[in-house]
Length: 436
Image 1 (spheres, rainbow, N blue to C red):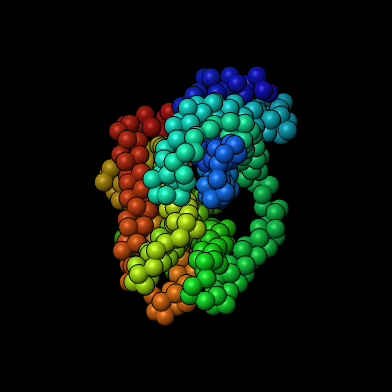
Image 2: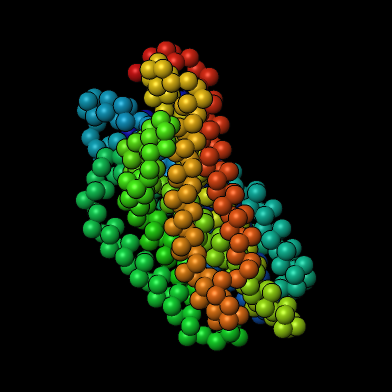
């Protein structure tokens, strides 16, 4: 089956482009930041510089590992679902479920290896640029020289491969429907994340306004609450759709399509919830902290500068990955609906009406994702603001929230509409015949 997997990748490279891009970006981020471990381990590096570099590598490296797993999992899941007919043909030809799973895993490993190899050069350049940022801000001494060594290599390649293998197994389980057996485990994990997030956010009130670790509990609380909401994404979407009023033909058809495809769209909704919560909470709390420090006339310590750099870096990474995941998933899911769009047009729908349905679907997804992401973010922002400034809701929150919502809406609806326009260029009769 491994030979078949290699032939599949070679014959249809375009199908694996999204997975390759996810693996490439993930490996680049992982190796870029883990190169800071190599740099910090050089002889002659002072303790402050070493601690700064090691902290950045540890925190962002961990986030990068999780993000590359989710990014590859989302693209592979869409890929496997679109190949349902091919998988069924292999089963009818005598292939066992284990052999099919081995083929998918082999494809993922090959693509992940290619992505990690391509990421080596950009990771070296990114590591040098990151070190220069730390040096320009005074967090790392100018005498420290960049090093790209064994830690970067021994984390970038294995982590990317392990993420690809795990994502491939998850994609096959989702496509085969076997993941339903683990419904209880998913429910338990959801409640654990929600309870831990609520506890972390509430523990903020146990700190004083001058504690260096004040931002950590509400930030982790917002992240865990968003994870809990993201795990409940299919049910949350279904609950919202059941309460939506009819909004004309396009709105009714969009709601019906979303209700039928709630499980397939869960990955997109999860990305929106996580993006909204993490970006809004982190950037707002950092803005509140900066204004509070400026108002007191104090000078930021090295630890405070490190925390600000890490916050902005983590948010930047999340923005990039979520955008990639949304674009990949939406493009694949929308382009796969060529036959559906053709049938709608043969039934009398105009291209404008089809685009209206796609736009309504994107709008509903954006509203649901932003709503629950905002709720999770506020659960962290409010306790932090109360303790740090005695206010309840900071004035900086609105500007940050509008920017986050604008990005989420532009990526979600824009990708869906642009892909649908491209699909609609195919004549309806040809679209139905070619996809049949």
